[in-house]
Image (cartoon, rainbow, N blue to C red; front, side):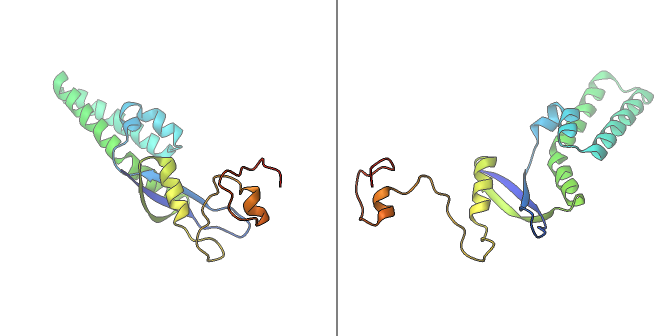
Length: 157
């Protein structure tokens, strides 16, 4: 099971609700392609900080004349730090854009976490959430003729 934090934006009259789920834990995309991940998530400040930290770290290691093995280990630790904190940066950025923490949900995938979150939310009228319909009601049920075991939506009424 994966754990996701849910962040929503306060809804004004006439707007649809807006929420974002962010996975807890390590971010593999931020480990292997941090610049692309920062650009894709529109983390402009994070991109600037990452570029500045990378440049400063490179200059510092060259100035102190570290050997290649030490430099490699330092770069590895830096990359692991970025990947471990990337989702926290995303949460911070969402909070900066007006989103607020709404809760936590656990599921196998992002899609199932979204569905689970939506189903546990009360409807706008204060009623229990409506379950999504998987198929249309059969004509026998719609007409009130009672339950017919092999009825389909294509049967004549």
